[in-house]
Image (cartoon, rainbow, N blue to C red; front, side, top):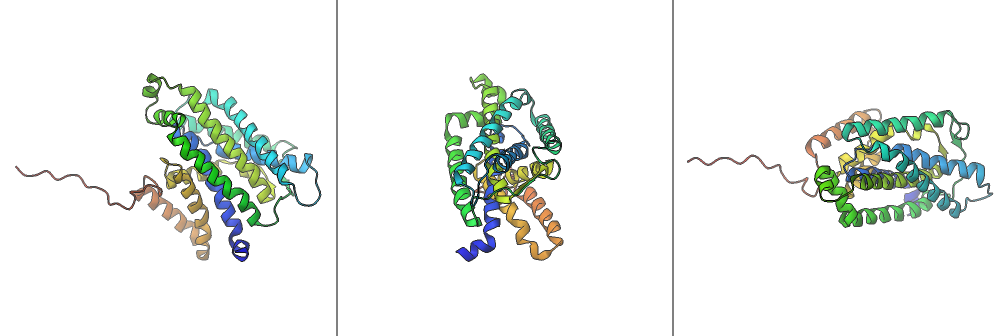
Length: 297
């Protein structure tokens, strides 16, 4: 087991982190919000952990796990506060206009981080202390966290709030007519996704040992959105499966060298065409139903 984690441990931990990041995009999408802001909140969480660990919590030896947990808590809270402040005006937009607004937020955060000395500017922050000496230690943290968030998403889907999210996704006007407050529930879904992304960012900063503005870019937003779309956007299992598969795919195709990027793109294109409901759809193996043939009279 130890030898296995020495070889594949980094990839397995990173797959779990990306699955969590996919869930952070799924939560607002559950309420019908096409948000691409997860990478921005991911960057905020990473900077919180990087700044606190390098400039506030000065320790010798192994980094205390208690400090890491405190950083993840603060990262989640700060990301949630920013999400509420940004979300109240931005979530009045719908569809592609909301996506553009969240992209603008991500770009603003990126430019700000490039021009602040506390974030290290374009160079970023290096030498972030690590609480674990091997990927196995991180797996004991990230694995249970992923299961806990999946359980939360599962219970949320069947709860009153989750049903309100789904009602907003299906028809906002009808949901409003039934007494569901669109603004409250949309901001709540947006904030929950932001808090999760911030927590993932804080853990990732320690795991990667460095943090810079490249962690929160438009490219990252598109990659995370692909996790949800390829995995499936109608269930919490979709982002988890999509995040793990799309994270592992480049490593599986590594023997193809430069051709792996072409093959990776082709596989994504085929999945989008032939599996429009996502990999997590239980009926994806079933053949498509053809149009009924009219009987001759």
